[in-house]
Amino acid sequence: MCVTAMVGSMVLTGCQHFHPEPLSAEDTASALESRSLADPGLKTFLEQNLGKDLDQWPLRQWDFERFTLAAFYFHPSLDVARAQWGVAQAAIVTAGGRPNPVVSITPEYNFNSPAGVSPWLPAVKVDLPIETAGKRGHRVTRAKELSESARLNIATTAWQVRSRLRLSLLEWSSAQQHEALLRQQLAVAEKIATQLEQRFRAGAISSFELASARIALAKVQVDLEDFRRRTTEALARVAEAIGVPARALAETSIKFDWNLASNAEPTSSEMRRDALHTRPDILAALAEYAASQSALQLELAKQYPDVQLGTGYQWDQGENKWALGVSMELPVLNRNEGPIAEAEARRTEAAARFEAIQAGALGQIDRANANYRSAEGNLATVEKLLAAQKKQQEAIAAQFKAGAADQLEQLNAQAELLAIEVLRLDTSARTMDALGQLEDAMQRPFDALSSIEQNPRMTSQNRNP
Image (cartoon, rainbow, N blue to C red):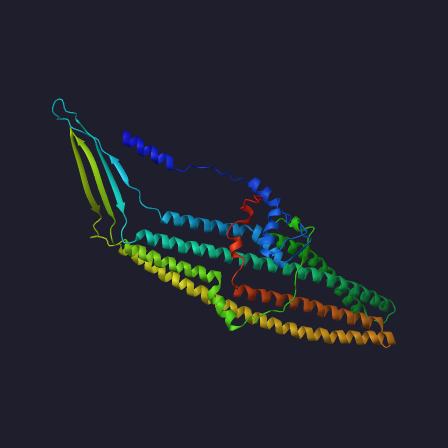
C-alpha cells in the first residue's frame, strides 16, 4: 500500500491539468470588427520590418509594402498556418517520448497455508520497456522534417496573401482610374450629343446619327456607374485581403505604384533556377519526402522486436523472493511486411508529388513569362497608338484655332483619344498583373519569414485581437 501511495503521488504531481479556453462567435466577431490600421502592435511590427521608426501614427498614406506587412499581421490564413506548425512542433515532443515503466501489484492468497503463517503472498513487478534499432530516433527525425514542412507552409501562405493583396490593389487602382477617365468621356460625350442635337434641329444630320451619339452617351453613363461600384467592391476586397473590416480603410490614402520597370531580368536563367530550388512549396515537398524516408526507416526498424526487462519481488509466507525476466515478441509469423510496403509506397508517392510540384512551378514560370512578354508587346503597341492619336488630336486642335475645323471634329478627336487612354489603362493593368504572376511564380526567398513565424499579435507587448 505504501508503494502504491508513493507511485500515485508521483504520477499526480507530474500531471498537467486542463484549462478551458471557451470560444465565442460573438466575441470573435466583435474582435474582428474592432481591427484597425491604428493598432499600436501593428506600428511596432511595421517598424521592426521596415527598419525605421514611424514618426506619424496612424499612417495617412499606405503603399503596397506597408499593406503587405499589415496583411501579415492580421490575415487569419497565416494564423491557421502558424497553428499547424505549432501542432507539428508538438509532434516532435510526442515522437521523442520514451515508454514508461509498468508497475504491477499482484497479491495472492493461499487457502492451504499452515497455521500461524499469513496466507497472503504480496508481489510487486516492474517492467522496463527498451526500444531497439533506433526507433525513437527515426520518429523524432520524421517529426522534425514534418515540422519544417509546416514552417515552410507559412511562407507559401504568405505569398498567397501577398498575391491576393496585390491583385485587389490593382483592381481598386484600375477601377479608380477608369472612373476618372469615364468622367472625362462623359463630359465629352455630353458635348458631342449637344452639338448633334443642334445640327439635327437645323436639319443638318439624320436622326440615326443623333441616336448613335445618345447611345454612346448612355453607354458611358452605364460604364461610369459600373466602375463606381467596382471601385467600392475592390476597396472592400483590399480590406479582406489585409484582414480588417472595410471601414478601417475609410480615412486611408492608398498609393499603388504602377511602375512596370524591373530591377532584374525576370527571365534570367539564374532566377529561374533559384525558383526551382528555393520556392517554399518545393522545399516543403522536399521535407515531406525526407519525412517519408524516415517513416520507412522506422517501419524497417520495427522488424526488430523491443525488449521488456522485468524484475519483481514477492513475500512468500516469510520468504523474500526476487525475480528477473526478459521478454520480447517473436517475429516468426509477421515481420512487419505490410507497414514496410505501405511506407515504401508513401515514399514513392512523396517523390512523385515533389516532382509534380516542381514541374508545376516550372510550367507556372514559363506560362507567366510568356504572358508577361505578350502583355509587354501589347502595351508597346497601345503606347504607339496613343502617341499617334495625341498628335492627331493636337493637329485638329490647331486646325480648330485656325478655323479649319469645327468644334465637333475637335470633340470627336478628344473622344477617340480618351478611348485609347482607356485601352492603355486596361493593357497596363494586364501587364502589371502579368508581372505580379511572374513574381508569384518565381517566389524569391522570403526575407520576412522569420518575422511572421510567430503570431505578431500575441507578443507580450500587444495582446490585441
